[in-house]
Image (tube, rainbow over all chains, first blue to last red; front, side, top):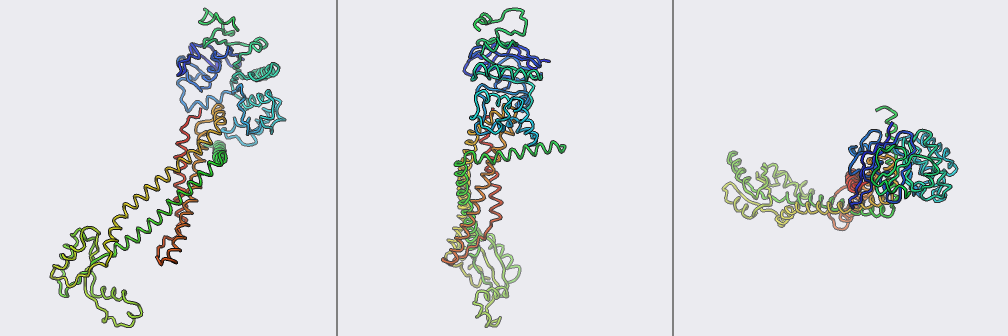
Length: 238
Length: 301
């Protein structure tokens, strides 16, 4: 089943900058996909488009068969509940404990306290950070903070995990650890889409890669191409 | 809606309520300043309104007492009396005309006498004559009306209004303008405080921006994100306006006691705390909702 379908997706900002240019790709349920490319290649823009934090300028994005371009504003929150999102800078709230940060993603669902506790504690346990339940983010290392952010992304059991440079602030060993965590999530059935510019991660974890360069999709290792595409000559730079 | 859904929505509503009330403490200083401003504005508006209302009533009442008495000759036929009254009523200076029989006039005269003297007199010792009480509208010239009344053959004596009645009527005429002015001032004051509430909500939003962004990204609806802002606005509005209204009533009540004791003026506005509470709460809700709506117009991802 195709979870995400990109058809000739172009995003042009008001400044005139074209962040994505005619990108097409299909992502199936249960896939693990790296979105790679240099800084400014369009990785973050792609993630923002998937979350409908930005609108496409032309082309189509279908998520679970729904065209984001014509999706009503009132339906966007429900679409986003299918996604778990992890950011490079963790985006943890400093005034909240680890437990409260993770529980944040469940607040608006109207769950009972016991259900929230059960889900949050379970997720923290799965990620090996249950002992930090009452700690504040500033008391944790970068790797631990990122685990908390992942816990928040996973606590409502999303169908798709979107990660925007989640290892950008971590060292090599921690980065591998985080990707291994994503692999575990992926094995449980979630689709994982991770934006990264780290070529060592791409080489270490042999996954499908969507390689972007200046907004063009210049390589898709999961797709057999019929003809070379614009910008493809740059793929050797990676 | 089944019980499970009802329970779920109740939990969400309680969460929103809690978030809204916590919002007051996110920017404590601003919230306190905002509530104090509302208290002051509401106190002034309440005090002005009560004083204005009662002053108006006193002046209205004084103005209504300005009348001309037309004593009539004994043998005045009924038809002539009715035609006479109709003629008087048509005058612009006249508000209304009341006929008093000789007995009614006597009873009134008796009331005017000190009780201890009135009790000593026999009823027929107090004069009484059938007459017309011609109440003045405040328009036109009172003297012209008196001249007009004196020209009729059936008029026996025309008693003019007491001294100063004309001024009282002029003040009564001004009351409409004064009331409108008070209303405008009240509106401006409350409008100004509205922006205080908007300011504190905006500050709370600013401090919670990251939290709201995260909540929006993980799927919170705009209604869920914005509702606490309305709760905060309504809480601040109701607390500030109601406290101010109580203070306003208290101030007027204290002034009333002073006026009675020191000036011998009886102005009795009562102590309408229940009315002040109800009105304060309603105005507070309106201010809170409007402020919440203005503040939440900012995009929340």
